[in-house]
Image (tube, rainbow, N blue to C red; front, top):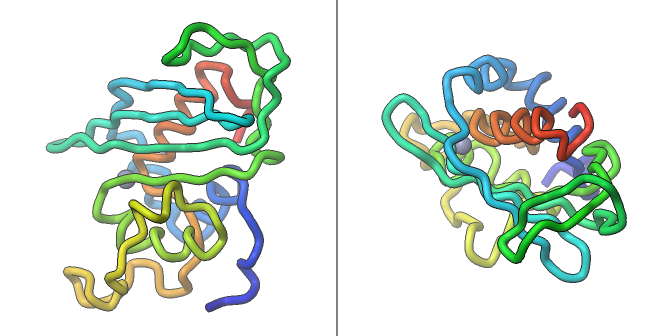
Length: 168
Ligand SMILES: [Zn+2]
């Protein structure tokens, strides 16, 4: 384990890691489409965003969970239980947990994100396979740096366009 990553991570840090180490993921996010987004407020004060993201051939379920958001604000969010008003989320300040069911996320980010508490629902989503067992036989993320796949980047872009978060 790389001790330098033993802190929780916010969405902006995950994004800038991806920009620095996997810049082609940022470009590839332009090739996928956000098909559906659902919001849910989870007690005591988390916002769970579930996005269905379409690629060239398949669609994937993605999740971004923001921790410790403010439930006293002016930004309307259509949640599963009605419209709620939250404070616009600054992704630099709020720790986040993410997940995507795509293969790249599985091999590149599942374990590194878990190590910094940035994997959504590790009980269900933590993979036991090591990247060495990936289809190409090596890790797509050798330094094991936490980050985002193109589907999660597309969802984050969407949240910015929808004014749920400030610029990432
Ligand atoms: Zn993905």
